[in-house]
Every structure is written in structure tokens, then in C-alpha cells.
Length: 77
Length: 238
Image 1: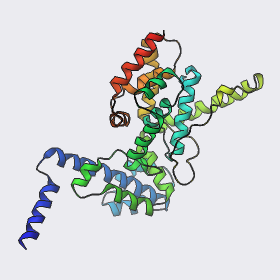
Image 2 (image 1 turned 90 degrees about the horizontal axis):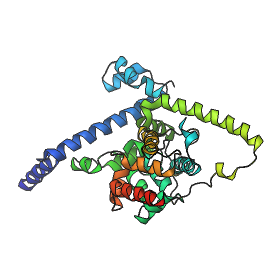
Image 3 (image 1 turned 180 degrees about the horizontal axis):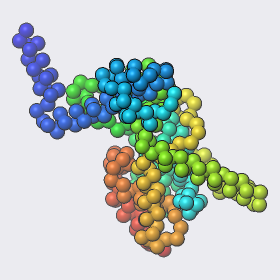
Image 4 (image 1 turned 90 degrees about the vertical axis):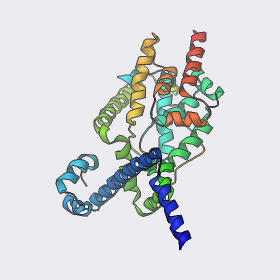
């Protein structure tokens, strides 16, 4: 039990990172990755004929937001 | 515009960069492809690069290693893989899953949007320019048949992305476009009337960001060092 806790603590320390440099870079990379995946998924959903409203519901934002962000980049189906 | 002023060798560099991009399966022409094409040219600038260990083979190795092959390359190319591994995200695993589950076309489109999203208008201008050139060349072709220099031998390399190569027009990345634009300035400050391979090389090596500096570092050299060597070579030649 103790060892499990210890390893969890170690993992958490490594992951959260005491070193801000590592931690911040990880956050930035993660954000970029999220944005890329969002672009990919939205594009694919549009190609499959999904409406902006349907996409917005899944992403938890308004349809105007999705459309403003991707309408031009993705274009029409 | 610009392409008209390029020397024959410089045109070959641009054409080869596009062929490299196609062969590696990406829908954009980046600074890395320009470097790959430059390293292979039979010019003093190309010679300097190869003498310093920047050979086409080694550049290609680095390009493929850093951005991979195929449609999704641009989506994952420049992400900080070590930082992500630090919080338990294996970028290669993510990539493998995405590539396996997403249609190729969606991957390619998203990859292109990542690289060139805000530069649609530029791409359109370039397309018009190419069409205009084609017509011009077609008109000229009748007057002077077969000019061997206008069709350089295709660029070659070790790697080839699986699947059909991307077709149609490939846009330059914003970075690569800037390199070509700045090459005009490199020619101007040297009072050269032509726009040659050396100017593209100098412009590329003056670019701080983008994929080129890491590639050169991996090949145990640096942009500044290569720039100085190229300037030297051309100064002693003239």
C-alpha cells in the first residue's frame, strides 16, 4: 500500500513537474495538440454532413463560435 | 512577379522542393523542402552545404524523422514530444490512432489547414500566377521548341509516403514564402541583378524559426556558420 502511494506521489510529481519550464511547455504542447485535433474532428464532422449546431453541442460551445473559428478554414462540405 | 526573376537553377530549387513535398506526402512546401532541394543543387551554394555535411540524404533523414511521412505529418510535426511525454502523453501513440481511424482526406485537409490556414489568399494569387505562366510558356513554346532547362530532372530521395502522392497545387508555408520574398532582399543588398540559388540559401539560413535550424543543429552545424561559408564562397568567386 505504501509503495503504491509512493509511486503515485512520484508519478504526480513527475507529471505536474516542480520545474515550471517542463510543466509550462507540456501545457503549451497539449493546447496545440488539442487545437489540432479539434480542427481535424470538426473538418471530418463537416465532411460527414454534420451541422455546425451538432458540432457545437459536442464541443460545448455555441454554434456561432465554431462557425467563426472554422467556417473559413474548413469551407463548405 | 518573383518567379520570373529567378535564375534557372533557382527555379529548379523551387520545383524540386515541391516534388520533395509531394514525395514525402505532405500538401505544403516548407522550409525543410527548400533546404532539401538546395542541398542537392549543382551550384556553389549547394556545394558549400554538402561540404559542411548538409547532404540531401542527411537532410531527408532529419525531415522524415521530425515530421514523419504522409498526410498527418503537419498535424503533429512541430509539437513538443518530450514535454508531452512528461505528462504521460505518447504523441506517437496518439498519432498512430488518429491516422488509423481518420479518413486520409480529412487528415490531409486538416494538415494543410494547420500549415497554410491563414494564407488562402496567397495560395490563390500563386495559382493565378502559375496559370498565367503556363499560358505564357505555352505561347513561347511554339517559338522555341524544347528548352531542356525548363524541365529539370525530377527530384529523388530515399523515402516515399505510402498511398498516392498529393496532387494539385501545393502552397508554400508562410515561412517558405517569406524565405522566397526575403531572397529578393538578399540579392538587392549584394547588388546582384539576378535572383539565384545563393540568395534563396542565404535567405533560408537567415530565418530564425521554422524547421531548418533544428535540422542543421542535428547535422552538427548552424545557420550562421553556413551563411558565412556561402557568403565567403561567392565573395572569392566574384
